Amino acid sequence: MNETLVNIMKKINIGLFGFGVVGEGIYKVLSEKSQLNTEIKKIVIKHPEKKRNAPAQLFTTDAKEILDDPEIDIVVELIDDAEAAFEIAKTAMNSGKSVVSANKKMIAEHASELIELQRKNKVSFLYEAAVCGSIPIIRNLEEYYDNDLLNYVKGIVNGSTNYILTKMKSENQSYDDALFSAQKNGFAESDPTLDVEGIDAANKLSIIILHAFGRLISHEEILRKGITSLKTEDFQYATEKGLVIKLIASCQLDDKNKLIPTVLPTFIEKSKTLALVNNEFNGVLIGSALADEQFLYGKGAGRFPTSSAVLSDISALRYSYKYELRKGIQNGFQSNYSSLQRIYLGFDPKENIDQNLFENIEESYQSNHHAYVTGSINLEKLKSSGWLENKAISIIAF
Ligand SMILES: NC(=O)C1=CN([C@@H]2O[C@H](COP(=O)(O)OP(=O)(O)OC[C@H]3O[C@@H](n4cnc5c(N)ncnc54)[C@H](OP(=O)(O)O)[C@@H]3O)[C@@H](O)[C@H]2O)C=CC1
Ligand SMILES: N[C@@H](CC=O)C(=O)O
Image 1 (cartoon, rainbow, N blue to C red):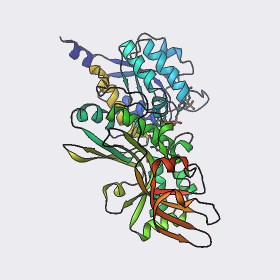
Image 2: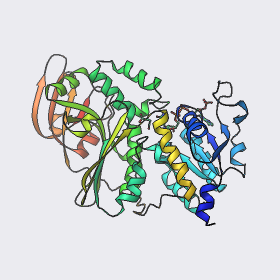
Image 3: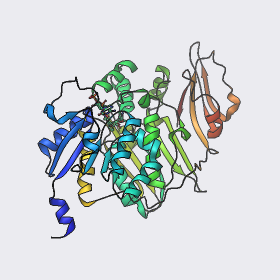
Image 4: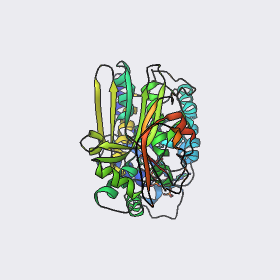
């Protein structure tokens, strides 16, 4: 029998870290629905006192019960602590185990070390669930868009903020109620600041950039603003103009082969594809030289959508699939923030805004309690303006 066939038939022993929204999801899928010949041998959790929907003998708080077990082939890491997750992934790969993870924070912060661990130990490290939940974006960027020259990847990559923006617009929910509901549904990170400040989207964008363009950049280098500064007046402006507000992560290659990566609240015309992506769904537009524009759409957060991507990675390990990163791994950030961006700037009239930073102003408005300016600004000037960090100022790209 050939080696691939033996691998396909062989039972895979899995060590699972985490039994929360996604961990319990993959446990259920593997034990109830999956056709894969797998067994979860142990589950490491943090709080042993919690009631679990699985046999008690499966659980432990001792990571060594998985990491030191030679019978465990694959470690599935689904915890909400990026630093602890990195230690787990590192030890597992150094012990010759392949790793599946959904932890975008860990991957974005330790990408080069993790890639090196994968290479050095001749194992696989897969993380489809880390970007856009159920959408197979990483494997597509890796395999399919290997030859066609990519120009841009942009879209909605965070389910929680899209859910919040949808509920605020369509059901008039308050920001607090909508965030609470996103948390209750299991969409939000344990620290939801990561979602609402656009950090999760920036982490995902840096992973997308690695697989799309072969460049390694930190989320901290990405020009970013989340959704926490958006005010009722901003939503009113959008409605009056036939626009909706979405948190868009975007990475564009300019004519000098430099990147323009941004995460910004963005006005989208109501009839455009991304405007139709609602609730916890994600949607990504991929622009390339030959194919022109294509669109990937699906649930970006939640127990079973995320589990589907984890399941797909486990299945891919049967044939020893790994990300080859054939586009290379260029270190060092080559951004080009010298281009102009049309923006809307919303602020309290009492705020001292230096409008000279704008290249040109198209429209301005002021009432007793709200003011806005629209126009074009150099992205470098926007980055150093202090407006991105200022909670009282809303910035929305056009
Ligand atoms: N929720 C979603 O829709 C998505 C989540 N992800 C990512 O998946 C990962 C898990 O998310 P999610 O399931 O929502 O998180 P949860 O908060 O629901 O669950 C986290 C789990 O991690 C366990 N845990 C935390 N620290 C440790 C540790 N040091 N050792 C062992 N176990 C630990 C917790 O244990 P205990 O139960 O004992 O408290 C808990 O079971 C995160 O990286 C997240 O970013 C990715 C895509 C979508
Ligand atoms: N918190 C994340 C979960 C999935 O990655 C999100 O809301 O998108």
